[in-house]
Image (cartoon, rainbow, N blue to C red):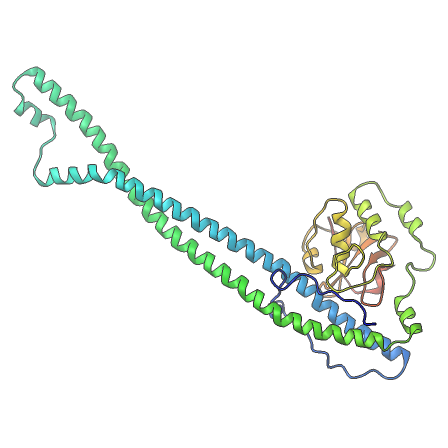
Length: 347
């Protein structure tokens, strides 16, 4: 029976332009292994390693796509706000425009609206005072209307520019997200082919070879009780307990539990049990949290491996980690020295 597999999120949600990251999924073109147990295991390890790289890169794409979708939504929201500001500014212009038009017409016809004009046309001192008060009131009101018109006109011009820029930004963000979606469909098909090679190589192993590949849940002389004795209270210690509870669960591409995992999926699941949300990919996990030196590792820290940060485990103390290593190997505890160390992060 063919081993179960899982490729993670659907194409509409998870995506990666792997070319941008400098990583390309290699087609399964490896030469058939020699007819020895060691050669068959090495062949499987090579295929599994490449498929893990591709899987983690696809997870990282999900982070990238989600960020671009969020940017698109933000840009669309800003465009809507800019359109509303433009509408308000234009409404203000319409409100002030009649007064400004009347003033312009009066000036064109030579109307005089100053105090000397009031003296010249008044028949009595009282009439002169009344007309001067009226002119003061009209002057102040007209001044406010004109100033309002000027401000509204400037606001409308500014809002029009902002609306145009926001619309262009939203359109560009949408196009970037669509490009990533389209790229996923091709890359996922390539990963499917690569996984087929892993499954075929695994099925070619004997039962003894499969058992050798799976190994033991703990290094010699170490067990779960010893690890738990050194855990300090707190969410990180609880995350270790959660991860340790999954020992023996199978490695499955794209899986985040509760019964099967890939490497970053186990980290996500374990920390979710203590109320913390981790990024989905090992590369993104390597960028989050707080940097920690290898010499200062504490249980619960994430340890990342390989130059491309394509594998991750959770430190449990004494130089060991719990991790979902690769296909055919259940979740287990191993020394961090088994893999090329990249970095460590504390969440």
